[in-house]
Image (cartoon, one colour):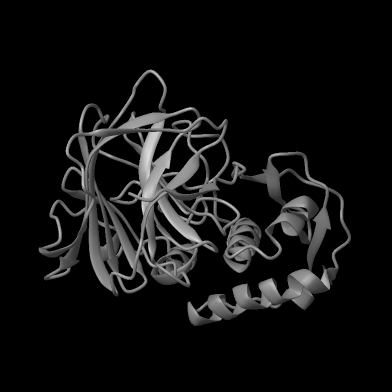
Length: 335
């Protein structure tokens, strides 16, 4: 067994959207040049959905501001509408793999308040991620406002933004069926369960194998957390540049993230708390990844990476887990 250099987690901020009250402002059209391209994207999407705005006549102010943490965007219901985007948030997202999705999400959210007159919507999809780009405001169930505004989900969230009655697509359903396993491609030689420990004060990605298993494979691991030291365990796949990972918490929460991104994609929930031996699975189908817990698919993602060679386990700060099996299979019929 080879243990590869651990990749340390980033600490992701929990970001908040907000709405302001009435402020005094001149009825004018003034949009910061750096924000204008995002406004134009919003207007293009609005037009596709049958909504048109004459903002030079109606007026609009879009500017950067130093907003109090943790706010990253603010909409003032003045005449004209004024949207403010936090400078620190904009600077910190620069160069991240999810730079454009984070910025679009934030700008579109505030324009959703100001131009579409939409309120916060904190209901959930069938897989328990947020139903709408308009999620925000007072915290719900002690969870962050993480929203995956990339890939196939982006089109759904755009449709829902302009047409709130939009139904969730099939890929956002929970699937209680494992993929059909093919031949074993790799099996870690474990005569008996082994313990893995993390001595760091932050979570780590503990590499277990580095190999090319092709475009379609299924990693299945049976492991158990030490409840006295671990808050979560999980699986990851990727490379030195970018790793997508799924952290499974003892309460049944699952954090979905990528090391090259500014913040997690989503936080979803298993149907019950996780105790004892747990069967975790990670399915790759091209650029699509699915995460399974005890036979149920909890999350599907289509965020592309440059490589899928490195596979391993996620360990929480000062955490300890016991691993009974670590097997990579080829895949038959894909779910």
